[in-house]
Length: 178
Image (cartoon, rainbow, N blue to C red; front, side):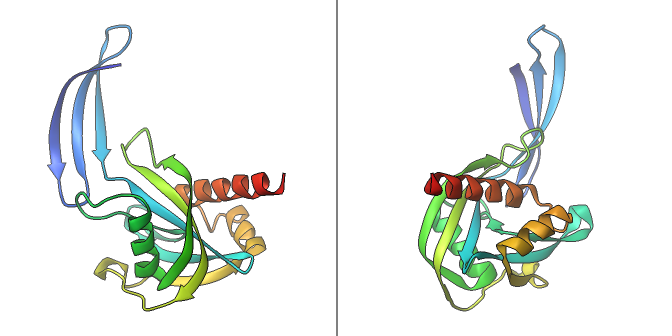
């Protein structure tokens, strides 16, 4: 696929939307609409054999969603560990003694350029929560690993980044036991 032209259709401080005219490998024309967003961080807060989750209302889906901590800076803040620590403290009040990068996932590669770095947070201590105004109805709770897996099976945890992060967590756990 080859890009012929690109034009920005919309922009705000969190994302932009562009329309790209493309040429497919056989030469036929096409159009791609792409949401560009900065790299995000997803944090798997692991403690006492379980996970800290947050629940929030996801407007595009018109329902609430239980997830691992995740987010991005508005504009062009640095991705990586600094972002992960900031999101963890903001959404849960937790601070991590150790933050280990588990990998990177593509959020929705057919729609957006956004990728997400996944971190395992351990050695957790509590501090003040400092949520953004848009997170005012966010809830938090700790669940055992067995309960988390049941929430996944029951479709209560359905967020793709959370599911991908759990897969990376499992792969790390398997590697440590082999």
